[in-house]
Amino acid sequence: MFTNDKRQAERTGKYGTPRPQHLQQLITQFQNSTISNESKEKIVANLANFSYDPYNYAILRDLNVLELFIDCLTEPNERLIEFAVGGICNAVADPQNAQIVCDCGGVAALIDCLSSPVRNTVKYAIAGLYYLVDLVDLKEKENVVDLISKYSQLVDIYDDFVGLGCLKLWDFCGKFDGVDLVDFFVNFDFWEWAAEHCSAPFRAPELWDCPSQCNIDERTDIWSLGCTLYAIMYGVSPFEYALGESGGSLQLAIVNVQIKWPAGPKPPYPDTLHQFVTWMLQPQAAVRPRIDDIIIHVDKLISKYSD
Image (cartoon, rainbow, N blue to C red; front, side, top):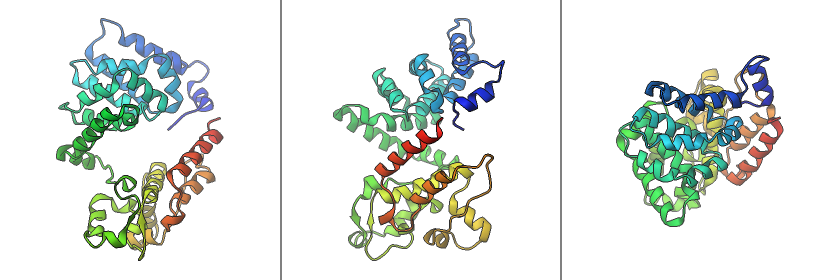
């Protein structure tokens, strides 16, 4: 769970160690020349865990933790590399962090990690490169995109993702943006394709029951994004939860947009967050928000609830 100043003060207590001091202590321990490899691995794993929370981003930048992660990628210790690339993957969703990693040679370092024998290292490297690809020049960008595509489609990596319970989602914005399905159906069995590439509980209504005229664009992705946010909040997709409550067909639950909200947590999520998810789960693609609308709304929510 993301934290803020109030929650952090409650967790630290009167005699606890403030977050910046705690992270500095970890770095000091890591830099001790007598420390064992196992202890180094634990420290980097700990730092990587802190790297997912935006509350820590400024602290990590001040303490040069991102540079520490990149330095670890040149070590002969595969576990150390795995934890370090995981930390980079966690942090680079933030544009400032991404720029630092890019400026410090992180793109080349992550590309080297694609040949790692450790599957997690490869997966984290792919995810990290995804966030960095727009920061490199055009010639290098084409190479990075090709590498992401190549390694994402490797059978053993793909199977590992599925084995971990990850979802099959597809970037319809990039693949089919603006495609008229009436023309598309002539040469392609779209339903079979959608069933193969998109996990059913996260599949938009137009991928189950297409109107006579329908364009596939980024708003199909927005539906999956809404389902994913709901699953992050409650640990289950919205329409799987609806089935558990009332039974029936998953397809009918999705096409009819049967959204129910579980009880909890305590304190409960604000109504504005529920409204945000519902906004993305509009049954008609034409009235769903586009990604620019989502970004604006997310910024507003962060501003409202970050204090």
